[in-house]
Image 1 (cartoon, rainbow, N blue to C red):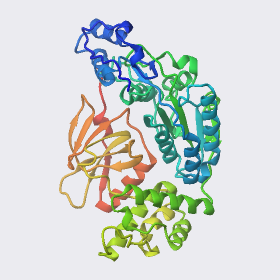
Image 2 (image 1 turned 120 degrees about the horizontal axis):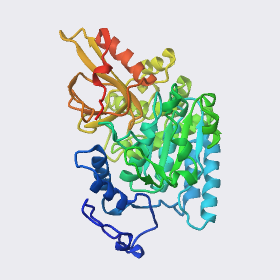
Image 3 (image 1 turned 60 degrees about the horizontal axis):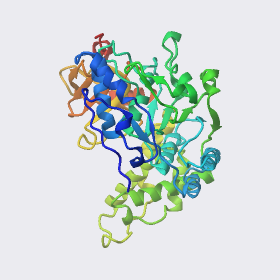
Image 4 (image 1 turned 180 degrees about the vertical axis):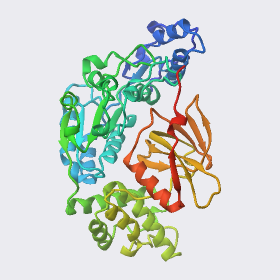
Length: 467
């Protein structure tokens, strides 16, 4: 097995390409120029933000010396696309698009994961994000979801100038440095929700360069001030309303429309999700191999969206166990879901509110000690159970793809833009404050549940500051 040449970066090193034996490397591309990054360290003071940014990113790159591998298409890619089509039957046109793209990649001889930028248009909740995650797993590359909902400036994508105390590289350069792949799959979620009120701060501005092969090879993140090769990134964008996207951006994508699954397709989706639960959960084998038809019919009748089905089915499995506490030996598939195991009350909330969303508790702190939040705000309220007013973070957790309301804020570090809450969890505030529909829905529910009143928006107290 070929080994990569090791390189340990320090600001005093004098790195040259000649120091690397390329015959010992897998297929790689020079994405970051480590020599220029080292030069930045020598030219700027240690306390400067630019110095810290480059030092941190050299650390992210580790022993790669700025050369990152290209994820390749597996030999079985077309068979795996067929299986993906079975799991996401309403994505048949999208699967066909990638089947054609991958055929051309194979024809080129390299077999490298590559495709033209694709925009998937369709209503919310049809499984667009889940499909993209599944596609990334097929080629074993880094996956990055960038939520654009409510984004008001381009620094989330293109970085914030190091002249600001909180200036740091954007999500794209970070995905390359931390993901260690030259061709990650980056999903621009809700492209149509980006807010471009002031043309001077167009949140989608960096995409004009990034979505073009030639110009993206010399992309300059504002926080690093040197070129990074972003030309091998594989792009997918999602949107509900194409008319809200500027024509020059639309013209850079191939566009495929995805509809909600039909009743017949939905049955296939449900069976696929249930099989995945059985295989991925330690207790999964204790349940029947197939999802009962009566449960399938009930789920279809409720109109529950695909993105919510797995949570509902896992919850129903728990109820089935409580209904029948003991069931033979550990190897017996002794449990079977029944229609009554589905939580009708939760499903009615989804249908009657007009908001495609259910309320669930967040993961335990031990499983998720930290989280990044975008489109965030801070609200102060007086709750019925507390004699003192409390402040709560309201925002969108990018990794989980969900709106969230935190427990009471205990500590705020303005330098790092981190908040610690009463639960012990730490939240990192990404970008500028904003508004997210999912988060606002959860906030309205939380206020009702906790008898909150006298709401005051105190977001301004949590803003960053100039260096």
